[in-house]
Length: 192
Image (cartoon, rainbow, N blue to C red; front, side, top):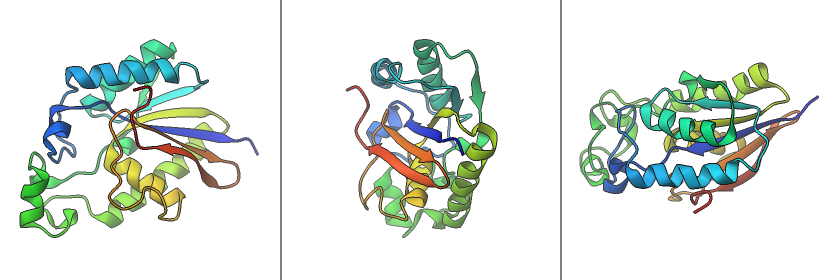
């Protein structure tokens, strides 16, 4: 059985990341610092050997992926809706402190994606990587909450530790050879 590699890259910084606002599926563009973050990370990523480049359909992920695509010289950028960030319903745009005052858990926010739904979506994403890209090195540009759940699924809840924030432009690598294992996780920005 051939080995499949999945690199999960979190998009560059947005102004809402700085303000600690729930972004979810809201369209929030990269800021200038975020563009620079991704450019620096792309220089490091170019030293690898990636076969496929995927992105979430949200603009901040697509803009990050486009920067990486240019640096890596990968011809096709594939948009995959399974890489979409967790929806936070009416909470999108709220400061973390605001939603925490009003709700005890994220899934209590009206319209938010449930925890069970994002866990199931994480499992489906991993299964689809094996079906569609067996034996390939896949780099996927996505979002903090989804990446957290995928890492937790593969590490049986060990990574990331509670309270550990995955920074923008961070890269986490999984390998599948019979089963998914965590190759590396690095919560700090790549190449910074």
